[in-house]
Structure formats: C-alpha cells, structure tokens
Image (tube, rainbow, N blue to C red; front, top):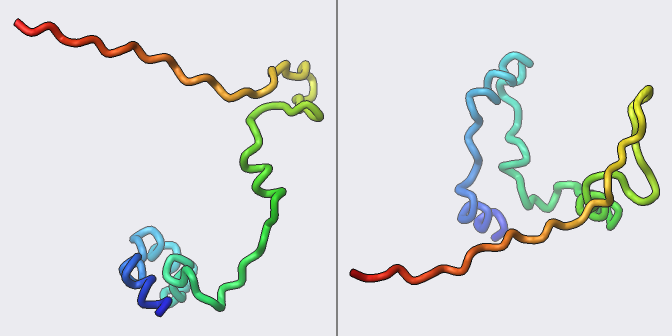
Length: 100
C-alpha cells in the first residue's frame, strides 16, 4: 500500500539527469542503485532524530547572538545589532478609479 501511495504521489522512480549519469559514468558506477528520490518512505530507511537543537539552529536569527560574536583576526569585531524580525512594509490603501 505504501509503494502504491508513493507511485500515485510521485510517479515512480525518478529518471536520472544527464549530469547525474555523467558523474556516475565517470565514477564507473553506471549501474548504481536509485537514490533517495526513489525510496522515500521505505520502512527500511534508517533515519536519525536530530532533536530540538537542530530545529533551534535552523530557526535562529541571523547575526551575532547575545552570548557570542565573531571577528576576523586583525579587524575590529563587527557591531551587528541584535537581529529582529522586520516589520512588514506598509501598503497604500487602494483608491477607486474615477469613471468617465
């Protein structure tokens, strides 16, 4: 049932691109097994639970944090203000177009 669902959603095995075929050919692996694109959802695929730390890193704001900063040797440390979420730009209120 899972294989049928994947077939319905993704259309089966994804064809290899010309670039992928070239790289595999250069590596002597013309008959390499299909990649992850074709085995998504396979119950035998090993996955790793990365936990909340990875999520926290991915959603962290850009720039120096309150506890750390980075500087290139020989240069003064950057004075980056704390990252904030930018406010959305204001948009003008639409005005009706006069009819002739």
